[in-house]
Image (cartoon, rainbow, N blue to C red):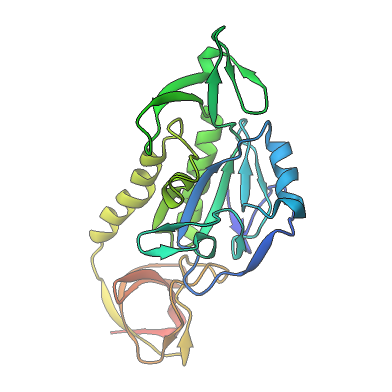
Length: 273
């Protein structure tokens, strides 16, 4: 599927609004993506639960095992997916991040008969199960694999989010709430995802040459994560006279670097030297 974002919603994707949400993100946010598993029996049941006020929980999207996506919260709005959390010197990751829930029951139990059973009683065949050690544990346990369609949809969605918002971190719930959460677990290729979208992107960004130096001519100019008036802000608006390094141009936008941050500026309000 081809994924695109318009006004902080996925174009052509079902939107099932939930009351379980906060206010708008602050300037320069969201800058992180948090990957979860639902721990439920189906994507549909998880969406229903995340819409229930009694759950006091939500996420921006749920991705089913067939790769289908449902959105519950716009990407400019805080969802309640991280809970008590902290990483890299900051805490309360709801206010920084987009939450992606993947339909997966999580850890399974192997019975004496060799079956693999979820916490809600469903049994899964051995060819869908792996034995692996969780990154925060030392003993091997059993996990339902994520489907290829589901992984592909997650990678594509994260790629689109990383071009539309100033994403600099992709983390598992297990990393921002160790000891409390174990999702998405070892069956999800989390390290591969962030290597592809975060580390590689940083390496490529470091190779970009400055093609010109410019100066902001508007009284205040929005510095956005993508060449789109609906894209998130990378920082507070830049005041008139701010010097910028121009890295390239797309349509009526300049890709620019300001104080080490890279984003996009409307070219009509930047005077290139």
